Image (cartoon, rainbow, N blue to C red):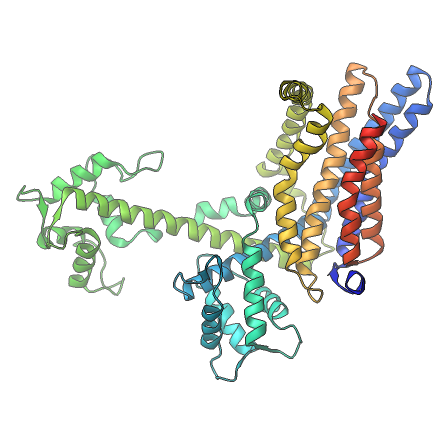
Length: 510
């Protein structure tokens, strides 16, 4: 009983604010509860219209608020930035461990101890903030740019549990294990949301900065320039142009003996600016032979040349993707830092004129239209499926389908929260904020769609039980999260019971 009260997680005040917004999204639900006490058909139709107006107004207000004061959007981006730091840190320790980080599916403690010893430069059996800062600087050498200040403050909070500004071996191992657990959570939906939010800030800059000449090796650029008949090494779909590479091989093969010798390969480097690249000419030829000559006979046949060029093209493509990731994450950090410094800055109306804004509006309208058109056929198919397999349609509609849709989000949230200590509220706050935002949009988008269909087709309202049940669950969680920031362990028992209780109520009322 003591653990039920003393242990749990902590969120910040902003998370409670988002929970309050979630509670306000229940306004059209409350209006629709009065429809059962209205006897006249005109009165019921007016009630549906009023609820529809309120629901659409809330939806537009939510979008407008995000434009003028993107508080929730910043919270989502902060969540993404934290996920990025976890990913980069785990990849870094995997590289340091030379692929031997795990043993029998679990982190190898001996390897983590070795990493601790390597980070402990002064051999004091503890990692100081200066040594942790050196570790953070090593993260920046990876493919994704990391904000040093954010990474240092976050990692020190995760590792330094007692707050003495020194990380002992036990704290380091526990912190690494925590980050590894979090990195195993699913981030596909997060990455997808990130792409949608940040693309508007980076799309133009990528076109200006990312150039193939800066990413490919100088010799590969020279190969590209020598491709005959103005054909490139890549097709329009991004795949290697095999025929062009083969024709280039025969062009370089002066004696037509189906082999390229070191002297023939020199033509690839004759126009490359070796001095600017600080490369040795002979060393460059040796590097090409090393990458291309698979059987080590000091000559390159057609297949070896083809495989070598394809290998270089893959590396060039990976370098492009890495640079783009680095640019984009830099924009995320810049966006968040500017948002924190200029919280009260007025909204930039020029953003409204950008194509990204119009595209987002059209996507919302299109998504709503698709949801409206597909809702009825979807329910018909669910009922037919239930009849075909001999299962109650209620069980399929309210248990199987919701679990299938939300299982990934639930597993990720549980994975993150289970590794969050009471002293660190960052992960828990961001996780709950992400869930509350989804509930807000589901409430107002779903209700707007249903009410629009009912009003447009003059249908009868028959969903009071479902609305009442959903409203009770959202109201309980929303009010609780709004009035307090501490979640003792006993609250999870109530949270888990809310879902089966709501299903029982639905089943009984139906």
